[in-house]
Length: 146
Image (tube, rainbow, N blue to C red):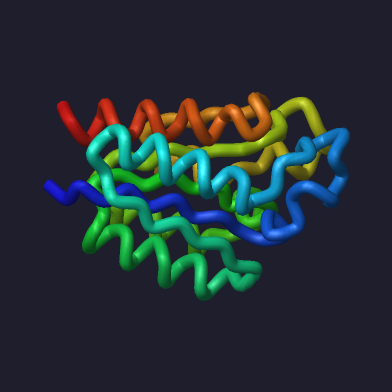
């Protein structure tokens, strides 16, 4: 099994730190990546960390993870609620998939209750802000090692 953890991030997450800090917090995606890299390294995993605003590119990254990852963490952002293509790509992944959201989509606007990622995920972590990434990496390390 691969010792590589993929963390994929969808649209607008490159704007963390300035984008609605009351909803998403003040940490930047760079801050989050640095913390994830340290946790992954300490857990014996290599890390591939990516962000894209393009749906097709995110699907390409999921397909790459399907071929090379020991585990996948995905914060698909708004594509969670709109992308059947992303759902279909996630179905190709045979390793643990952890869905991640900084906020709790179920506690927000009605349109965020549609979720195309969760049915293809092993588990979901929502509503813990940037700490959710730490939780997801810790869980992924344990899943890869078992």
